[in-house]
Length: 256
Ligand code: PGA
Image (cartoon, rainbow, N blue to C red; front, side, top):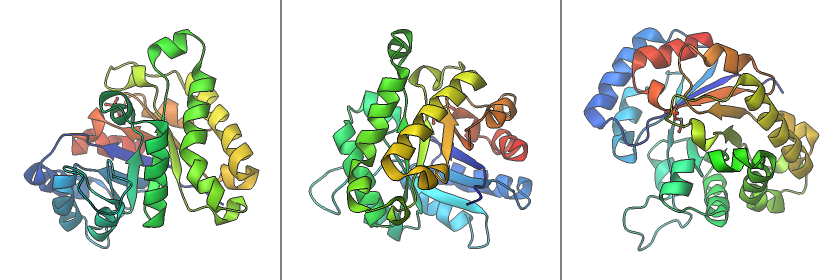
């Protein structure tokens, strides 16, 4: 399977509907048949504006930043996978470190969200990453492996072999590199991605594992995107701060 590189923008809690429309107007003028897959994850309230701005012909794929695992119910403030799919999302971020560390999301909840996503044919982008303390304690491999395997539990159970497992992606996002201006070195990123690829191979078979895109995230900017994207096993980038401006995001897409 040939994998296209991925450039994904996670807007977090930025850009209301008006700013979303302005972003896509400007981005449209910058993107000319991009070779990588280009994805944007706007806030839920801006999703409709994004969907309207990104026409059928646009190369941009849209996702939501979070879902609940239930399809509906008394869960004030939450949205379901079915709602996201109906609104036109094809992807969802699951287990972002801000969800884990700010909102206390557990591995078990992440696994339930992955299951809910694939049931509604959303592609989950499963985020994993170690904190600075865990890195200092030399626990990177252990932490990201256990986060990955826990989140895949529901997928691996349902598939008898790797081929029947629905599409998913993985994002390695070291917590200490997110929003800090600190980036993993290409060698650190490669090492973590290699670990994730090996664990994926154990879980879903080598063939299937080699087709899974593993993205790096954590202070990716136009000036460092090229070296990160050239690192072995890095299939794309998940960009936070630098995805908010069409110009910097467009530059990262060009680099890719
Ligand atoms: P950052 O965020 O690029 O602002 O560090 C990345 C992310 O959290 O996805």
